[in-house]
Picture 1 (cartoon, one colour):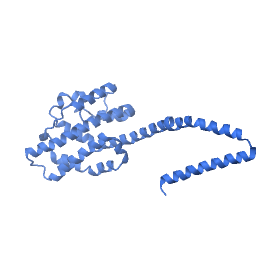
Picture 2 (cartoon, helix red, strand yellow):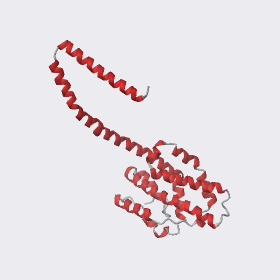
Picture 3 (cartoon, helix red, strand yellow):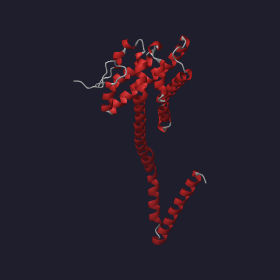
Picture 4 (cartoon, rainbow, N blue to C red):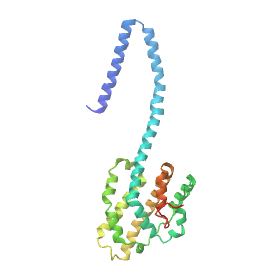
Length: 247
């Protein structure tokens, strides 16, 4: 018996119980007029009940559920940046030959509001991400990413991941870069053509990672100021950032 058949049987049983109870009421009181008034009144209230249950209450419960999903999702994103994201962003951004010209744009402040985050988001979408592969020591870079493969796989096993397409796309790009580096084995003497190919994969990660970092910083600032404070003291774009709090 499938689930639909069970619902039909259950619904039919409820209707039958209701009919039996009304019949008992009539046999005891012999008052069809009262039964009719009560029954019509209940039927008249059904549209309002549907409105309350299916629209207002359902919307309220759905909002709570979505909030809980976002909480879980941002916990996953936070663990990603703690384990690998910040290190990746530090190494790759340091290899950006033009970052020094725009580095001040990434100095997110406590006083930033929606507009400042929006402006930086617009800038990141139009920014031409460049990477000088000669500034990246590929051997330790590859070793660091490959060592985190198991961690990243565990992230994908969480069903809440499918609620965030852009972060899933970032993970896919990091996985691809990991495979590119791992399959090469010896990274000490790659031809220029191959380094150019790898630079395309690194730049893809760079762009996606920067935008996800900004979105997560905005979430922290709004919801968890103490996490935001630490993130700004370890800002991968800020060469002068220090975790030590000074006056």
